[in-house]
Length: 397
Image 1 (cartoon, rainbow, N blue to C red):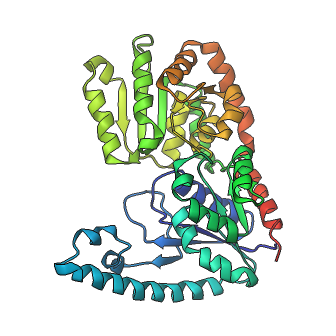
Image 2 (cartoon, rainbow, N blue to C red; image 1 turned 45 degrees about the horizontal axis):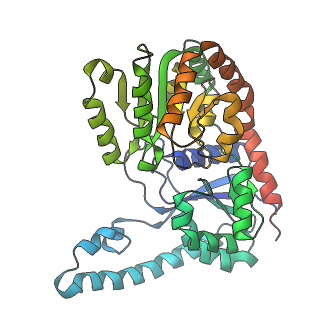
């Protein structure tokens, strides 16, 4: 399929996390490659993400969304005999029809040389009907699954993902291993395209590389605070090593679940003051700050239940910082034995063993650091765009 226009679709572009970061990077990469790029959202932005993209079109836009059943809080106040909830359900039907008309007009305005690329399941589910109807109108629909095949996200959204697999033109995974599993499950071809590294301004690049030359005894986590991300497992692994390596510090940066963040802070507060001072719990970082955090650290760490293609691997590799991680994805299984430290199983004990090895062997850590930089070019935006172009070529119209 010949492609001139690329629409990147997401539930909400202000959401914190890897998908939002990747979509922002892809948008710029496609633009620099000569494509017309626009952004489609299911909901308006909200919150304080400093890097949030402003969408060109929002399906469920404005304050009225709070009056519909798309806002789950309306179920908490059904009114006398459920009258309020009944009225809001009726209003939701009308409002959805109105938005369906708006969305249809928007999609028709895009032209035939257009692909819609989404990697969040809610917006992808919403667009399934359009993918079914628009197959003869020249628009290509592509969905990239940003977690592992074994993840709870797949098992809890099986019906939706099967519909996406049936009606979308392309289904993409982040690794060859996951692509093979999805192809067998969906009974269709599935492509594999990794996430790209972020663009770096030359001045920022210079600064980051200078920081990377003076690495500190820091173990760094950057990512979302979510139960599946294993923050407490990371914390316990560092605590287990802390007495043996008293000069090392653990830094955690991110946002998300306030419950998870509070659990971390409560655990840190329970420690001896001297150890608690070596654990820094911080908030979200912008793109430059993420790279600077990885650059100054000697190690990064992850303990997710499942990952598709963890940005922590790619972002830390480009600044020569090896990752210590659970075997959470096929991508990690492919790369970490050479450029990082892979736990043998998903357990605190296995992670602690690798963290202790990584901290204790300076020579091995330096060797892996050099390999990180050498291997990181396969995640460059330019290379990833070429991979996407192969996917576009496979779509037949």
